[in-house]
Image (cartoon, rainbow, N blue to C red; front, side, top):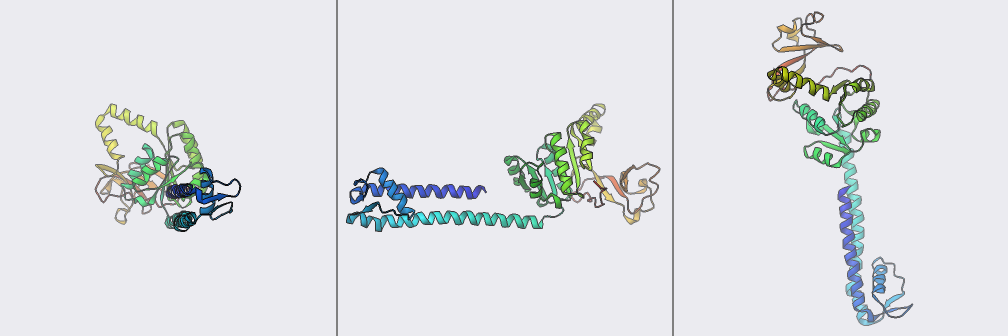
Length: 337
């Protein structure tokens, strides 16, 4: 609604200019006007006359009596009155048109939005998360960012994402982001208590979406799990473990950093088992298999219970990143939240 407000302010200034110009025209020819209450017309009377004349109220207590004043009313004040009315009507139409256009655009956007990704918080964690997801093939038009800061939303829209300003702990704000139709939700605010409230609200609105949440303190991770998060990432703990690994082996730390950065070097990719791999062991596949997803269990590649691969399994593999490398979306139904 910023644009209609600017239009209103612009038109208001124009209307005031017309009003002041009319008042000074009347005051310049004040000898040709008479006030039925006290006779002569002063500056205040001129502004009063201009106001009631331009608004077509016309009380008749101040009237032009000389020929020059009447001629001025015909040639100058009447056109100014018409201009004043055009400004008022134009402002109303402009605001209504802009509001209608905005409502139509929002309704159209909402009607076409399906299986999208909602990002709560567009700080360092939120930006990095969505950049990683987009690097695997997700279109920017399918990303909706929710943040209470208008500047942050401006930055998100500048990157090509849709933005919703508001507190994500409120259900009405999440509904504006169409959370109930989202496929996946990334919860990355600045505070852990906010993450818990957002996760609770989002899970209440959408029982099937995959919710991934970030917390600073590891002790809050179980609470987020209970709130409905499918996966919880402890930012401080993960950073600390990466620091420890880098101390023990800088090269290993570099490899881990490479693995979690999608689109360059080595990538961790989840993909389904193809028919040609059914009946083989994880080590017999062409890719470097790290884990096997069977049902809701994540099994190591060397876990004896894996046995041979099944068509319903999914594989976590390490591959060399190429422009065409994409993470296959997890389309399995989630367990009840």
